Image (cartoon, rainbow, N blue to C red):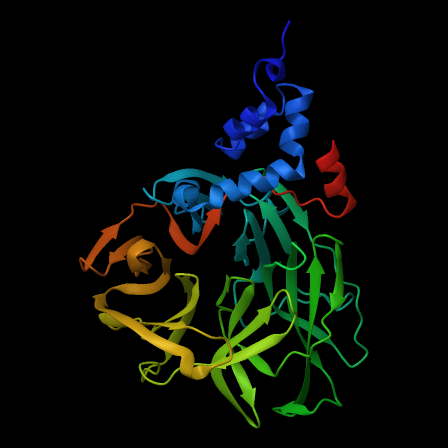
Length: 403
């Protein structure tokens, strides 16, 4: 009796398997030991990811990951949307470590890279920080591969700071192209009586820690973090090895609105103040960051929710750390009944949430709004491409590749 490998060359089998979605590949691991070893191998996992990310296949295999709150139960669920059709492919509960999560706790998507998604827990009130005084730890952080449903709750860092009490203000997630490693960066705020920064009679010391998936451990970042205040809502984005947060950046004795960026490869911080013009509203201004054409892009709009109409101003940053490199792209609106933007689609179309909690798509070329008929209140939306990337670390990855 001939095996599959005797009928077809292994190279041809690999080329066929590269076209299959992850769910099919997981099933085909049961065909025979050689297929299981092939699909588990790091070489095939990398080839499959690169195949999905090629220009001709990118939109076919890419999509969006949407957190929405169900109308009936008020529970949070994740939905996958196909990139081209925006059709909901699947809906699932939060990852297994967080079943039964309390209502006052919310899950935030930090970012998604190569099919891995970083989530963090926070209170429903952004002004309240989760803190365990026994461990000086705040938020739980989890890495998740939605395609394989593999999850990894990150360990507590265990790093102590004798200067004072430590609070985790926010986290970032990205990829180090130099070491081919996935990293989580944690922004820390330490109350330090000897710090040079003194705000409202409270001294602050800023630091950062990095978790590497390859080592499975935390370490401090040698470069000191600049003085900053995280903006309410912790709006953040990631593109091309740089993770950015919306923040107020310290300059001498004052703070200015801008972005705080972290280079995942060089592990250094960069700050960029926001551009002048169309940024301030008499009733306050929301500033949200997304990725548009692989650039950090800024969307500003008024905070007054009672206003019937609102305009959205879109800018892109060409060079980190250079305020003059902001370019204004276009203005959307005035639009009626829009609560906030959720992200960009192709041809600069913009996902929006209206005052009724519906997911809309605005086409600026046709100046047309389409209701996407999503059954639930959209909370957050990111681009996503599925992969077989494992959350096993270090030697585990090597053993998996050799199995």
